[in-house]
Image (tube, rainbow, N blue to C red; front, side, top):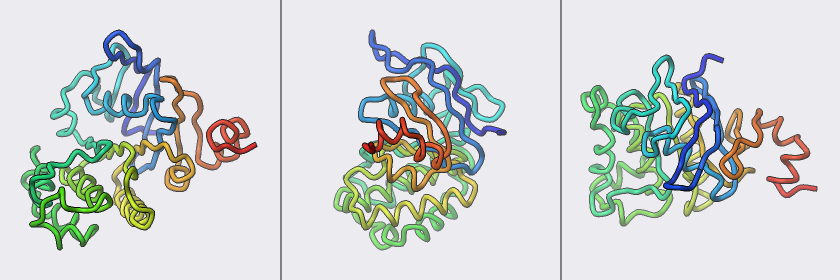
Length: 238
């Protein structure tokens, strides 16, 4: 596969504690890939390292033909990776529109922010209705739409989503997943971090399973769902 993102033998420490041991994964162009595992398995640390928040002790992160392992977050975003962080992390005292525009601060994204904003509003019409309302006044699901929209304003080639469905009503989860499918169909690759294995396998093409900071399994959604060890350990099936 001609990978868009390639992570090789990534080692990350949090102080004196090792969080990741030789983690490797890859994401192809326009592909939907899952990074699955229990709480504390190392999923958020992995995406944090990819976006430049956690400089790795060793290993390599490559975007197409460029090694971005030790680039700062702003340089990584400018090269086409955007993160929707766990917990959304919006500026709750700012309006929806202001939050969205915060995503378009790099290069070409800034010049095309009006066109991109129109696409975000088409994808999430409720955000256009509430554009002048403070983000903190929105429901959890609407706030998640703002967080996704803000990331899209950077015009990414790769979208990292860290637990995007936490605190989101089930009826809104489906709406958000439909939007993410549309984003992927338009050529944006997606790396989805998710604890809910069932939900993730319905969405992704392939998945990597991380356990205690180490890669445990990988395969297509069907391969993992039909793997007896995976089903017993991660799906609770006997």
